[in-house]
Amino acid sequence: MLTNLLFPLASIVAETGGKTVDKLNFARNHIAPRQLMWLVFVGMSLSLLLFIIVTKQPFPAATLVSVGLVALIVLVSFASNVLDVFSLRADDLSLREPMNDFQVLLAGLVGYVVFPAERKPVFLAVFVLGIFIMYWGTHRRKLRNFQKQGMTFFLFCCILEALLPSIYKITLGHITPAYIGLFRVIFILLLSTTFFPHKKTFKDLSSKKIWYSLASGAIYATGTVTSLYAIHVLGVVHTMLILLIGPSLHYLSGFIILKEKVRAGEVASSALLATIAVVAFFA
Image (tube, rainbow, N blue to C red; front, side, top):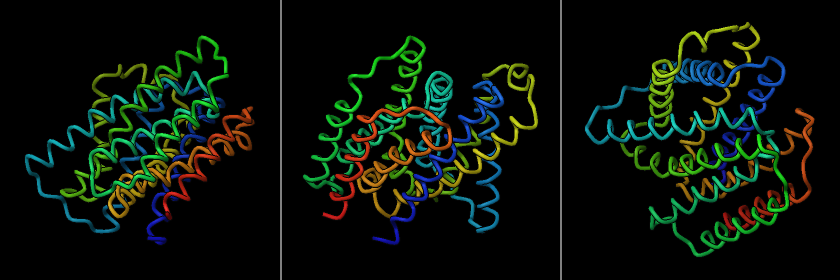
């Protein structure tokens, strides 16, 4: 069990790193959301394909069930990523973190309902208590209009993202983690290329925009594979408990690297959530 903890912990580090690079790309290079999304998924696709080639993983069998599950993952992921990218431009990382807490809590609750074998009363208590802790840490914060718009985008993104871990676990019975990640990003890339105007995607692209985006794509690819392995070996509920550590690390990154202001209440609520989650995990 302790060795398997490396998977969700690596996922946390990768997610923090990717979001930090994305925010630097917005701040320093003024990249457009559509450009960022397209380039990041190019980087993820190349990285996942390289991982599959190096590890010599056989291609999965195509069945009606596996194809349907991949299609569901792609549609949910595409919608959530579009919402996520448009929310990034309006918010700083510290503003987004309470909603990241909510996403993980909601994903844990969905997993708790869908998979009876993963149920323990202490886990349900953590997820329900966590929602109140998150509200306590954020309800006094006043948002400007552009921040409210960004948080609305991010709220719907988080709701969609909270459904994915349970869908992943079902799909892992048919397809390996690396191929789930590869199919997901390739089809999202195809959808992005199809629905977003090409001229706007490639307009005013600089080498810095490209390299920052490809770098975050490689980081996200690492997070994708490790999170899927975590769900595979630990289950949805245990993985979500550990991922509650993530927002605290995101705050640290926003404060040290991005020089963002963080509120004591939000930091305290995230730290409290992480502590409770770790205690429940080993209970």
